Length: 280
Length: 116
Image (cartoon, rainbow over all chains, first blue to last red; front, side):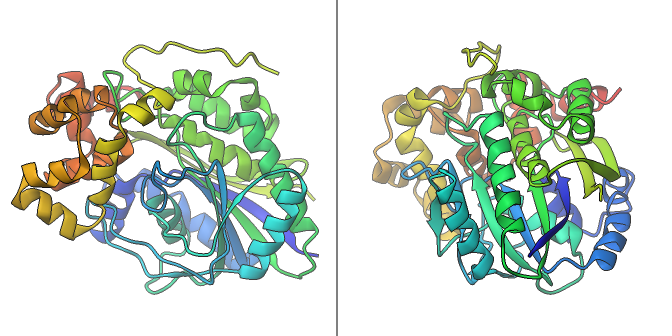
């Protein structure tokens, strides 16, 4: 059966794409964030995952308000990045793992997650930048991917509790996959930030740190909050912590944090990176 | 199970059913700006481009004003508006500064202060 080797959660701020393109990783503004990654690169070298399930949120590249699925799962042989309108370089296509996609889709629908399935799906910065951070070499991403997208554009947004359960169901589905594949689950977004309104620039460091700690100590901690309360605590876009929560929930039982970095600001955002490994 | 109550958050408009309906035409136009040909068409003839999407009067005025709070009030969603801002080379710190009535440097300092 397939195995989850770990979960990596990271911010996906578009400015990271500019920093990578401009080779700014060593600049003082960027160094504390990019320094989180070499230990993760070494871990990836060791554990050698075959496929990444990437839990992310689309920002108006693939989905518009005409059709806005709450949960969607990619089932494409290849995923393309594209122009998002504000000029970060487009990354090469990503190879899909359609066998795992359809296995996940069947298992999740069977567990009453009524998904949208996507045999064509453009993937935006929230998907591409974390993969580029994890596999920074030139050329295409070396492992196969399955995108899982959660709506955070339009209310109602699924609750923290629901996203946690989605993560649990993804974890169970992977454990039931008749394959010897090694799977890494990536969650992207956050942490606290708000782009819109008079409250733009809102950041909540104490809440972020408590949330990060909770993923290790008490992973259901954030499920006590409604989506509106999470917006209050973390900003309109801080709600992206739902992706972290779903990714963490794919690992049954305890985890240890092999990497834990919090740094702000990146652009308007408090940035975090964690590598979580199952304990035995 | 936590109580799923409505929370009123100062300086924040949740993009809910009301905003999604009100802002549809404006957001549809901004979504089109994913394509460079559409960005160029807007720049070439702004009025004609807006007319294709049937913007409401408040949306037209907001587009003309380039005022982010006005665009939000007209139903704009920040993810689509970011594509509109991209036409003018504005990033999220420019629009953050504009919405909070600060200079960009002041806005950046506010973000730095959040880390203290």
